[in-house]
Image 1 (spheres, rainbow, N blue to C red):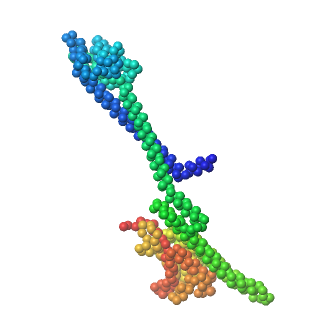
Image 2: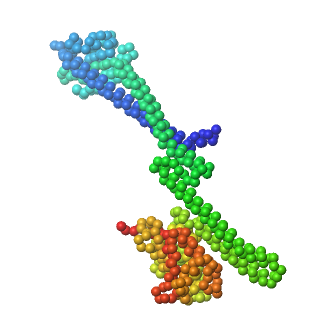
Length: 474
């Protein structure tokens, strides 16, 4: 049960529908409250407007007799409700003179034998106050009142009241219609939301079916007609599949190459073990083991390079890496007192790849330069003009130059082949520059061998993917 609820809560369809239901329901409630309030305010405003007209009519009929007593000619009032008992429309005149207050001095026939129980109130001349109070027969009345002063000594309060029953019934009827209308609208909106979610998530169902087809091996890639929002995901996933196929194919090739490379040493060792003359067996075994180890080292290096190259989001500062390698080489070749110089390096250049691969490439080239140099090794780091801007991946160039004997131009391509050593007296396996060449190629770069301008020594140039960290101006 817990897993079912958790799965339901984690459903994208459930989340979208729940958010829509909550949002639309809240909007409908707020709309109902606002519309009901506006309607009630409008009805009450119109009710009071009509009541104010009645108050003006009664005020216009108000006069005083010869003794100063108030008079209202009820027959001149046009609304018949004034004359019908408990009709719901009433008027009343109170004498509020401070010396002789008298409530209900005059009142409409509709009040019959009752009076309006008005609250104590102080009004300025001409000012109108509104009240809501109980009336005859448990009714609720809306009352408007004003003060009338025929002279300085006398003050009368004239009130007009009307029953709110019809108004309340109109508001209640509007509320019922409004609630029904908003409920129907809510259901329609929820139905539209459900249809929208179902239609919007249909491409994900198609994507799931495509993945099932891919998993069952019926197709090598994701295929189908997907909307523009989903198509980039499909393209990226297919790119990952292509990359995986490339890695698997490369691994199969490496395994086949390694097996083929080890076949010859194993065959030689097998034949040697069958011979009765064991005088030359030890050198032969040692030679074949070294050959087998060289092949294993080569293919292991290629496998590691293939696995690490091309990973996104990797940035390694070039200059700090070179500075660390220079310190190592100065200790390794301390007895030769070599001068290793890093000339005006660009601190902002970064290698777009793995730190271990950068150390592998630079370390092999720098160690090779130190082995052949007479007294000095020079290093330069700079971005390749026109390839790097605003931090976007570009190219950088690392030149490592020694003042050694150099090599003829026709022999330069040979030293990039695995196992080739031009001088067997110098220690090494002959794999250094070949591994560098392989790794540089995997990163889409280039390895160049040149003779410096002074026709002495060798310059090895690495063209590598890079990014520039400092901002560039337009």
